Amino acid sequence: MFSNKARNAIILSVIAALLFIPFLGRVHLFDWDEINFAECSREMLKLGDYTRIYVNFKPFWEKPPMFFWMQSLSMKVFGVTEFAARFPNALCGIATLVVVFLCGQRIYDKKFGILWALAYGGSLFPNMYFKSGIIDPWFNLFIFLSLYFFILYNWKRNGFDKEGLKKTSLPYVIWSGIFMGLAILTKGQVALMVFLMVLGVYFIYNRFRFYFNWGHALLFLVVASLITLSWYGYETAKNGPWFITEFLKYQYRLFTTHDAGQEGFWGYHYVVLLIGCFPASLFAIPAFFKTPSSSRYDRDFKVWMLILFWVVTLLFTIVQSRIIHYSSLAWFPVTFLAAYSFYKWDRKEMSYKKYAGIFAAVLGGIVSLLLLAVPLIGLNISKLAPYVKDKFAQANMEADVKWTGIEGIAGTIMVITIIVGLRFLKKKEYYKSAWTWFTGTALVIFFAAAMIVPKVERYSQGAAIDFLIQRQGEDCYVNALGYWSYAPFFYTMKEKPANPNAYEEQWLLSGDIDKPVYFVTKIDRVDNYKQYTDLKELYRKNGFVFLKREVPHPKAP
Image 1 (cartoon, helix red, strand yellow):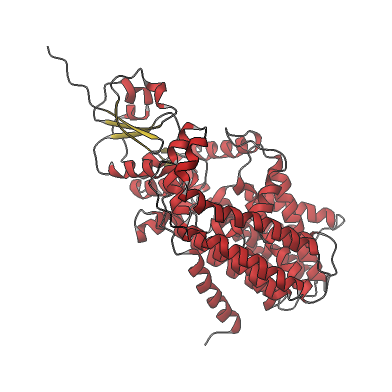
Image 2 (image 1 turned 60 degrees about the vertical axis):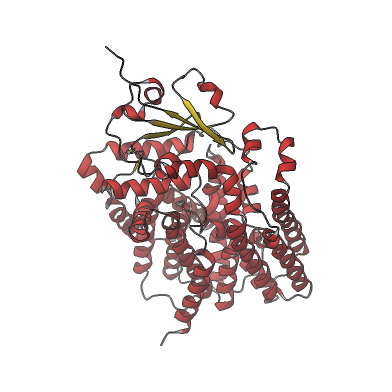
């Protein structure tokens, strides 16, 4: 009924669904990005405007609409919930594992495809991001697919020794353009910038020999432009150039300045990748060096992946803002190189490097200790709280969270993974070792998402979210005070304000309000608002202070 390739893809899809879909709605969305994007999608549905993005019912020009279309469709099906906000990325996780499996199988064989899917699905951040409600997983997948089809185009046009390529290179150009257009619609023209920089570096590596046809390059740009014009063109024709102009200005500002709290040292992204892409990051290291190649396409695809890694990491090292998401496209080459190491070790085409296993054991040991420490801290948090100097953090620790100790199962699995994985490495059973390291880490993330993350969230924002949910349906204004949060918009299911003064904090604090105002602030900031005597404190909980201002009574004549 199904071919072997289709059957394998279906089996992998089911496994990926079991990894990424459960517990999506178990924990509230996190400030800022998750709630920000979910609110944009909620307002897209609320306003019925699918070409412009809004947050707090004001134009939000930081992102194109592709991901919000996905989220709003999910919300139409599942309702405006955490599950719906995260479901598109669970689908992306399924698609990504199938894509890397099929790519790996096509370039090498089935075993390599499995190793690549294992490495991607069984590394910390790559796995965790498929349980989130942020844009980057789809953005990264579209860029990778665009580059992958361009690589196939290069092979077909330049006579590489790869079986199974199409009779003409044109379909590869078209598919590359389609996925580039989708990438631009997902997060902006930075996708094309990265793509062209990778092609430029390969051009230099190729000793300045043109490996593409200018007509095909033009076709690629035309196809990508037609896809992007479905939004850029329609929005401009419908509403004029203002929104698109502001969007492009923001993209430029993103590369030239940093936002508050987003600074970092120059090696930030390398540290993030080393830790966040564990264990793939450690096993990828040997493949960064010169290795024997079994064919021209073997050598060439590895070159492309190395170029992609260095372009992404160096580009976003130059960018002023330091955000984890920015280097996440490098997860594709990192997991490829990890799979490459295990594949070559297993085939005895590359000598095993002991330092990879040692480094993986050390970092894995640190991860294990942290995971085992979390429930111990939770069980003894009242004893530790007095030693915390930050007033807000200390109050967070007062949250009523029930710990049983069973949450340590995630850390225990990590310990077992390290022991068994090292044993297989010692016995030179590299394929079994890869299965152990990556499957074990995937299970660690699965149990941590189910048992640890919801409890940690109760400390960090639980009390505030509970208060906001209670305001749903109440005719009032709700605002964060002294800090920025998107939670008051999404978790109150805010309606579009009829009074434009509602956007002015000072009016809400002291103006002639037309309905009650609730404020959420933090325990270390509430004293900054003592002068507003109309504010009445309702209660304090876990570091948050909840205030209310009633509508002033009219003065007697």
